[in-house]
Image (cartoon, rainbow, N blue to C red):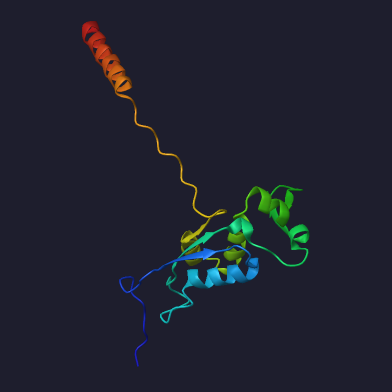
Length: 162
């Protein structure tokens, strides 16, 4: 019997849209991590990247049980003496509503280059739809003509100077 190894050409990645509204943070992040790793597929292998794309909407509406909003603290250190800082879950949800879910999913994925690639396929949005930047307005024809005239004048001045 031969061992099956998934080839990149055989991989078919699906796109899952997950609504986080009124779902528990830990249970939701477990489901997302399984989708990113590909554990729901029959071709799953722990050493291969077989996961799917995951888009999470309404991350600001995720809920937690108990007193976690006030008691759960996320710590970070600046690598300087006395550089330990912490932020509560409640404050993090107010300032950056997507980070709590991203942090929970990150902890459930492998802490290797493979996990980094899995994390790149995760998109988390605080609201219903992703916020798209406003398209840039095309320059008016007058502005384009002015710029063309200025460059032409500069070219003439350079020719005369020579």
